[in-house]
Image (cartoon, rainbow, N blue to C red; front, side, top):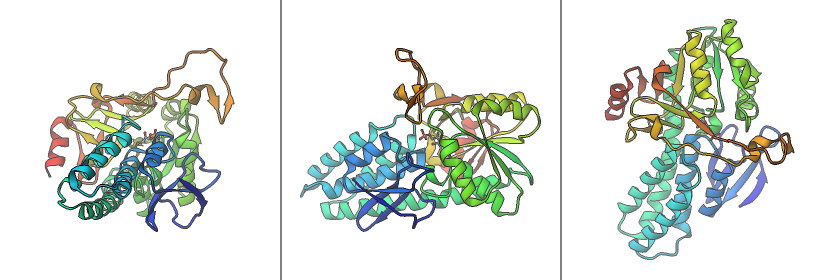
Length: 352
Ligand code: MRU
C-alpha cells in the first residue's frame, strides 16, 4: 500500500486507475484527503477492517476489486489452482467485517465469474470487468434509488440521518444521502440533521463533510438530541442506510439506529431506510440472525486518540443494531419502494 494526496476525483471513495485500486482514506476525513493505493488484496482486507473504506456497499465494491487483485497476484496457470487462490482471498476478505452482507454478496458474485472461465487469463480479465461492473451498478442503483426516494420527501422536509450512508459509504452518490441529493437537486428545500454517530463519528466527520460539500443545509447534532428535536417538531422524518436487511424487513445498521427508529415511532414520524437490494439477506428470516460486529474497546474509551475513560473499565462496543421491521415505514431500493408486510414486498422486489 502506498499513500498519495489528490482531490481529483471528488466524492468517490473508490477508484481503479493505472492498474491499481485507490481508496480515499476515510479515517483521515474531514481533515485530510489522502488516497491509498493497493496492489495486494491482503492490504485491501486490512483497509476494510480498519474502516479506511466503510459503509456496506463500498465494502462490497472494495472487496470485488480485492478479488480482481488476488487473481492478478496469483501465479496459478490452471483453473483449479487459481480457484484455490481465490478461495484463500475470499476467506481473508470475508473475515474483515461480519455485518454488511454486501461484502459476501460481492465475493460470491466474483467467485461465480471466476468459475465460469475455462482459462486463467480469461478469468483474470473477467474478474476485472466484473469488479468494475459491480462498482458502476452500485452508483447507477444509488441514482435510481434517489429518484424513487425523493418522491417520499415533501418540500421543506427536515430529515434526521444517522451514520454515513452517502457517496463515501457506496460506490458513489449514496443511498440515504442519495435520496437527499435527489430531493435537493429537484428543488426541494430539504434540510438535514446529522447525528454525530458515536463512537467513530461517521456523521460528524463524513456525512457533514459530504453535505457541506454539496451545499445542502445541514445541522450537526449530538446523537442524544434526536428525541428532543423530534418532540419539538423540528424533524419531519428519519432516513438511514442499512448493512443487512432480513426477509421480514428487520434492518441492521449503525449502532444507535434502533433508538432513532423508536423515537420516530413515538413521535409519529416516518422512518425510512434506503439500501440497494445487494443489502438484502433473504436467507435470514429475521434480524435476530444477523451477525453483529463487536469492535475494540478503545474506540469507546478514547476520543480522537485521547483516553476519556479510566483504565480498567469494561466496555461494550457493538458496531450495529437491529431495528425491528415494525418501526420501518418503507424501504427504498434501486428497484422501487417496499412497504409492509416486508415478508412479501422484499421478495417481490428481488424476483423483479
Ligand atoms: O461501520 P460503518 O461506518 O461501515 O457503518 C456504516 C453504516 O452503518 C451505514 O449506515 C450502512 O453501511 C449503509 S451505507 C450506504
